[in-house]
Image (cartoon, rainbow, N blue to C red):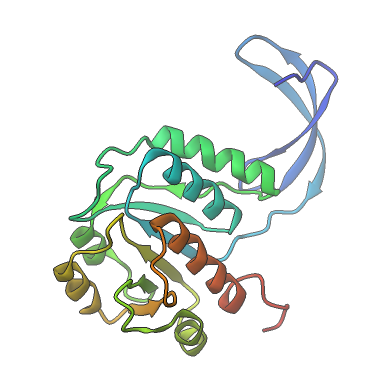
Length: 216
């Protein structure tokens, strides 16, 4: 940062809204600031999680950034049978999430959870939270129809997307066995894993999230 003593910046901590603050002291590694006034009250993002199979470094960074901008509350890496990227740099992803929150004017940073296996994710998934399963097989209802028809069932949602190459056939069967799962199709074209995650989140935001007119 090129900030100096006397400069003013905006601060947020995910709890107390946004504050205008003045830099009162700086060293190479630390800064002291004085909070002068609150400029925005705290606003919650919609209650939607993204469970995604890790993908190669740059797309994973991209998904983290854009999912943060789209208002995701929790980012959950999921290991599947076809997952190529077996190591997840959580600190790198967290830095991307913080930068995206700052850029988008969001007053919170998504919770970034440790990677889990697909079966463990499904076992621990809260039954009251709808899980949109982006199924590349194409035999599910279009996502807009599925979400619009189910949005009155729950206020808590999640989106599940797979790795490069998609889910293993046995994984598809396993996922569909759960009553909280809502299989959806993302159209006639096969999307990249990062594209699928963001497309699904955008549709959900438009139909059930905070892109709707107030009161709907």
